[in-house]
Amino acid sequence: MSKYLSERLQAIVPYTPGEQPKIDGLTKLNTNESPFPPSPAVIRALNSDEVGRLNLYSDPTSSALVDAIANRLGVSETNILPGNGSDEILAFCFQAFCDEAHQPAFADITYGFYPVFCELFGLTPQIVPLRDDLTIEPADYTAHAGPIFIANPNAPTGIALELPQIEALLQLDRIVVVDEAYVDFGAATAVTLLPKYDNLIVVRTFSKSRNLAGARLGFAVANESLIEDLNRIKYSFNPYNVNRLSMIAGVKAMEDDAYFHACIGKIIETREKTVSELKRRGFEIPPSKANFIFPKHPKLDAKQFFDALRARKILVRYFSSPRICDRVRVTIGSEEQMRLFIKATDEILEESRE
Ligand SMILES: *Cc1c(COP(=O)(O)O)cnc(C)c1O
Image 1 (cartoon, rainbow, N blue to C red):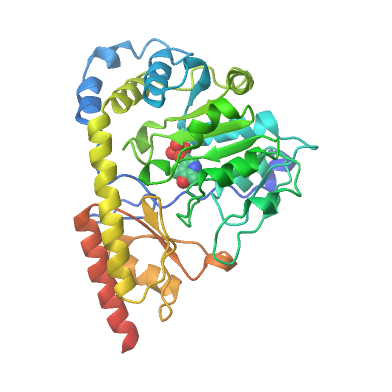
Image 2: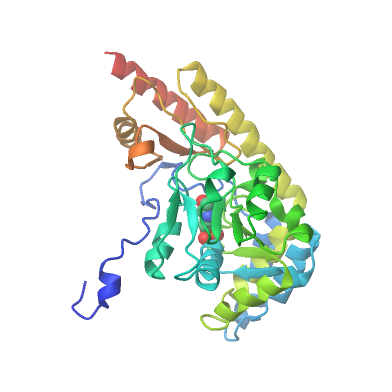
């Protein structure tokens, strides 16, 4: 830290992304990426002469991408705002709708970036603890006046709310941001509620279910005036927020519905198989509607489990915070990756018995 850094920023604890180590033969199950490559249509399109146009700025309105998303979701173009990852869209939401009198509310156990945005933007979040079974109870939010941020399915639990529960939040008549990073793996989307609620913002990403984490693409779905509000931030910060190559990748990925469904179908199938394998070995796992699971074992210390997996070149995620330090978060990878994970788990369980 230099002596020139603003005093306010000196206190910030930045977000810690999952490790991206360069280890040969690593089984990487720590950042909820897809184990599958992007759609073949994406790969073909990026070999095109778009690279030769990188001397020119990208389309600030992202109109080709907006059209592709709107078509796929069955909403109007005026309901969509693409961003540089959904993290950027979430940042816009905190900036646009939160202030001293409208402090954001979110769960104690949820996406770790929400509290970081609060620090960065000088907000004081109102933390609403999950119930003992790690579920979100909408009624717990009635006491708070500000915008509500819900990850659905939640991370790192994988547990999803049903739409009537989302509606209960929307009926509180404040901005409700539903972060649907993992919705394609089996939860119900709140996009269908859009015609009914002018306080709903759905945030989606291409990083998890569309195999494009490295492209940095996300988007907001909301009514036209909320999209206008978010555009005020975007055009005050980074008008060309989606680059040319990612724009093309996003359009092609949105259009290739068959590949998308094949990939998420495979992940869901592998998740269910992994869950039943782990349960047979005594693990407890909350019902996951995401591309990760959050197991704990009565006889395994989670940090030791994490370390023992890492020693076997299998990387999962461990969180040291009090209510969840007895679990690890495991991304659902390919069938082969999960076979390696189960095999290593068996060895570690065996050792712990000795
Ligand atoms: C991964 C993730 C995001 C961020 O996605 P990007 O589009 O890659 O920025 C947002 N919210 C949740 C809950 C996530 O897990």
